[in-house]
Image (cartoon, rainbow, N blue to C red):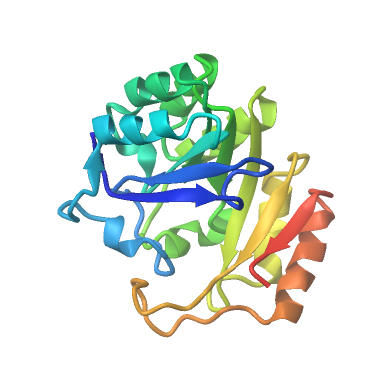
Length: 229
């Protein structure tokens, strides 16, 4: 497997754990605000292969608690289950970031004990999902299955939304809240404008707006937090 990025240590990506973050390329979404847009297509040069990653992890035993798997959309990687088996066999916890498009693969990883924490993006309310993932049309069926899987499953998880001024409003968070009502935890992440995003000219919400949206979300998910302000 080709690894396209590695953050050797993070205290933020895996709640309560010291971890590294592994980046894979490729994604089925084209979110206009994506911070990892260089990983969306094929052709971005790899940093290392899975053997080199495992050698790195071998040296970090006793230092790192876990490994964060992200992208792009990492569930596009057909050999990911085999890699996770090796990472788990080394004694590391695994956190998976996903957009929820592949519930069958997610369910398989969860049932085999290959993930310990899942962070799933909820891009917007159902009515605005297509726009927010950069598609003219979008069938929410698979994403909805992943939401239900996490809500009803046994693996620890969070839902999260990157909030963009032009894409989200109060109705967005009423819609999202109704959809994920009863979730363990939900986070609103403040968009950070960068030159590398797919659609220039997008803005962060004001801090006041972000906190107002969080208050709306707490009607449905009491444990709602704000990141990035």
